[in-house]
Image 1 (cartoon, rainbow, N blue to C red):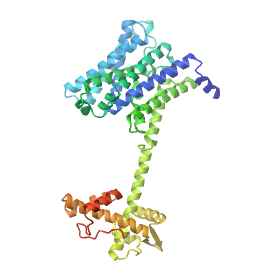
Image 2 (cartoon, rainbow, N blue to C red; image 1 turned 120 degrees about the vertical axis):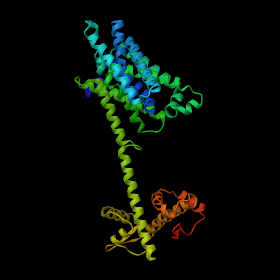
Image 3 (spheres, helix red, strand yellow; image 1 turned 60 degrees about the vertical axis):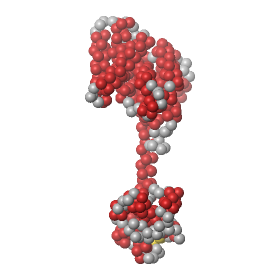
Image 4 (cartoon, rainbow, N blue to C red; image 1 turned 90 degrees about the vertical axis):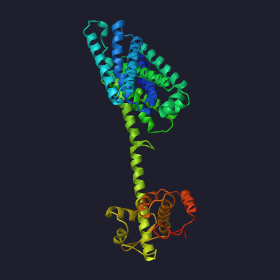
Length: 431
C-alpha cells in the first residue's frame, strides 16, 4: 500500500498527472461557480445544463467528424447556454412555473441528445467510439489535450469570478438591491449563467451528464455548513472539490475496476454528509445537542420557578416540598421531574432531605429572577402593547428564558421598577 501511495503521488506516470489534475480542475471550477448557483436557489440549473450539453456534443461531432475536446466544448456550451435561455423565457413569458420549465428544458434537450447519439452510433463513423462515455464520464481516459482545455476553462472562470465578484455576490443575495444600485442584473446573470455552463461543460467528459450536477452543487452545500462568509465559502468549496478530485483519482488508481468520476462524486457526497451532521455551528448533531441543552435549561428554570412559587405561597422559601406538591404547581412528567431534580441538586440549586426538596440560596436567587422576568414582561405587554392581562401569560412563559441581564435592566428602568404585575402579584427584586 505504501508503494502504491508513493507511486501515485510522485506523478511520474503522465496518465496519472492528466487524470489527477484534470479531475481537480473540473472539481474546483465547478465548486466555485456552484456557490453562486446554490445561493441563488437554482440548484437544478446545473442538472438542466448537464443534460442539455449532450445534443451540442453530438452536433459538434456530426459537423467535425472528430472528438476534438475544444470543438466538443464549444458545441456543448452553445446548447447548454441555450437551455438556460429557453428555460428563463418560458418562466418569464408563460404561466408555467419554474420547476415545470426546468423539467421541460431538461427532458427536451436530453431527449434530442439521445436521439442524435443513437444516430451517430448507427452512422458507421469509426471515430464515434467512446462518445457515449459523455453520459457517465470517463475521467481515466483524460489526455494532455483534455487537461489543456480544462485549464483554459478553469482560468477563464476564475478570472470572471474575480472581476465580477461584487456583482455576483449582490445578485445572489438581493438582486432588487443590486438593481437599485444601477447594476445591470440581467447582464450579470447572463455572465453567471455562461460560466456555469462552462463549468458544467468542462466536467462532462470526466463525470458525465448524469453526475455533473452533483459536482456543481454538493461542494457549495457542504461549505455552506461551515461558514456564513461568502469568500470563505468559495474557498472551502474549492478545497472540498480539489480533495474529492484527488481522492477519486487515487481510489480509481488503487482499484482499477473503480471508475474515477463516480468516486469523485461519492467522496464529495461523503464530505457533504459529514458537514451536514458535524459542522460546528449548523451541523445536525450540533443542533440536536444545542436543542437538548436548551430543553434542559428550560426544565431547570421552570422547576426553580415552581419551587419559588411554592415558597411564595407559604411565605417560606426554605420549605421542603415533595414531588406531588411540585407537580401541583406545574405539570411535569415523572421522567422530566426526576432528571430535573437530579441535575439541580448536582448544580447546587436544591437540597434533598429524605424525599423532599428545598431551595439553596443560589437556587432561590435563580428562581426569583425567572419569576421577576415573567412578571415584568407581562407588565410590559399590558402597558406598552395594550394586551389584555389574561392574554400575556403564555408569551411571558417563553420570553422569560431568553431575556439577558442587560435587557432585564432596561426593562426595569423602562417600567420604573414596578411593585406589581398586571395580576397584582408582587414582582420580586434582588434581596
